[in-house]
Length: 190
Image (cartoon, rainbow, N blue to C red; front, side):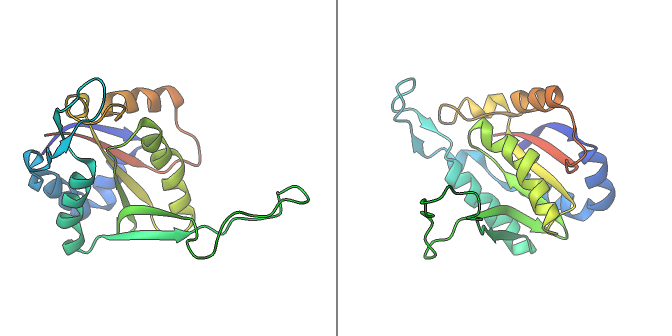
């Protein structure tokens, strides 16, 4: 795969380049090592492109894991302990202890968090505007990288996959808040 675009959210590009040059190099090499053609394995069941071969987000995510886990990157998981104090009288929590809810970050190394996102738009925004702040507040990261497809790649994925250009526009319209983490947004293409 290739890098097609880079966007600096809250000074993310400069921060990552200054504080995490070795980790950034590993992310760039991982992107370049993934052969997108090997991951065009999903047969579309959608009405707009039935039978068409599409890139599989599951397969692409596994390819990134195969590249980064051997280099010491780890998936970080936080169990969510939900407060019950806000329920109204008479209501009890539906959450079971057997499978407690959690949040996780795809890859973390030396306080740099990385999310590889081939999903819906809302997941991209959540990662950058909520999850990365939460994981910084929990002491796991100081900055982040969000790897997303550009429009050209998203057109060969399931309907509804968001893309770099849309994501950047939305972040620019939103602006930066004082709680935001520095994040480098990397747009990739096959």
